[in-house]
Length: 365
Ligand code: OKS
Ligand code: ZN
Image (tube, rainbow, N blue to C red; front, side, top):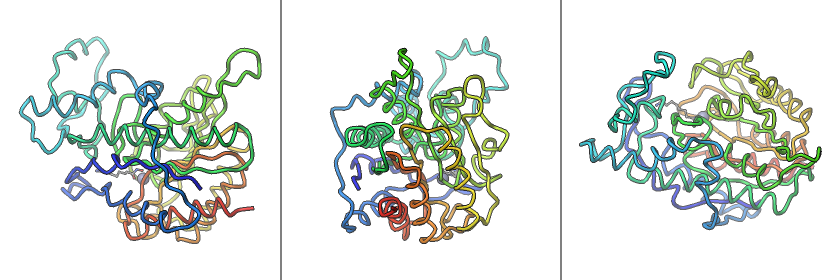
């Protein structure tokens, strides 16, 4: 299997975050991608490839994120330091709660300082922006786009099973149209989905239609960003399995099913804490049935291995054998599939668990 990876992903390295009220070391650390890369390098069936530097990453990011948010991410660190902020990282102090304000009260926005902007474009305390964060976030998108490009070149839409791994870091599924949070700055999977639609316009009906794509999110946490981005869009089905009543707390219930033209193109499968292999895979089969029914041209998998039994910030009980079964089950969709890396924090096993999913997929018949 081809694996795309960009060394700039390692640059983003904030020293700390606030978790459960404690100042702790940053769980989403560069040791994660280093360990995954090391594991896949030593496995015969993977080829690690560099990303395509010729891609216009910002152009594709603009299909998902607003121009002002992208501008913010690019300028936030310098503006913060110029305002006298701590040189470690941009860190919000107070959040702009959209529901507390009426649009006409946003007239002062042009005058906001760096700390005010930080609280406007972020929803939690796990996205410090360092001097290198923007570079890593773009590298992560470039990784997803390079993998999507290779997938579409080797496997046209609707062709049988084939898989590529976008070894992205930082992750993306919590990042919304104009919000960072949960270690995520740019929504790699969503940008890749738009890219696949843009390079493969579907002309079924004569008029240019967007190609149907499914995003299966199997990270432990709900992908609130991906859900937000496609909530009213019937061309991208979003299906998520995640822990009920855990981070990001306010989204991911079964009753969130999309809106407007996108109604019934979002499916949430919240699972209880303590869910183990058998319970998880039974629910995954229901999620896969929803994807099958929608007949997507491509499947994107937001792959988190923070569902692992020993993950330090999560409460599921999946095992290595479970990951192999998950890969096998996804392969039964029989579609070109792009795996996009999301979470997973048990450094000792993260590489082996990713490898198990990808080999389960690849070896499935
Ligand atoms: C609080 C961070 C809470 C956990 C963030 C979860 C990130 C993740 N500072 N999302 O999939 O793995
Ligand atoms: Zn996660």
